[in-house]
Image (cartoon, rainbow, N blue to C red):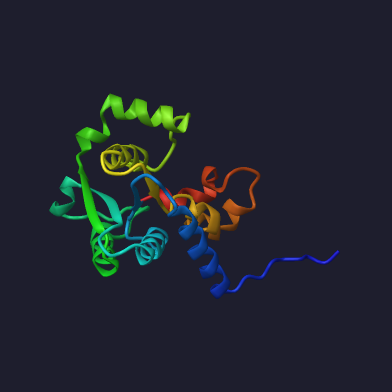
Length: 187
């Protein structure tokens, strides 16, 4: 039997994404978006804002109080997210909130416990990602009950560097657990 791959055009993909976002906007509780300024969250926020009147959709991003002292590029972040989130929010007309965190908050035993309970296993990578997401969600809960996000899109669509490394993609375990992924996390 020949390999039957589904070919979906870019236009069809955008229709599916638009419909998926639209379906999630039906809510009887306050709804918002998580906006990092990246492609996934920006697309979701823009589509959601287009269906709501300007200013009615709240968007939230997270940054660190020390980032104004000078951003330091690492293997995960090449540039600060906040300027992109602010620009997209202004362009599509969301009511944007930037949650500022400190290193002390990220290291809190309460936050660590919350992260471990939420993901049900010790996080083995991503540094501050899980604690900052936990704190962001705690803050959002004061304003909104439902949040749309682009979480999981990189895993689904191959957005990480290891998806381009044959040593990582042709192994018998998760690509991020192989030596093929170390170039992504190494300095």
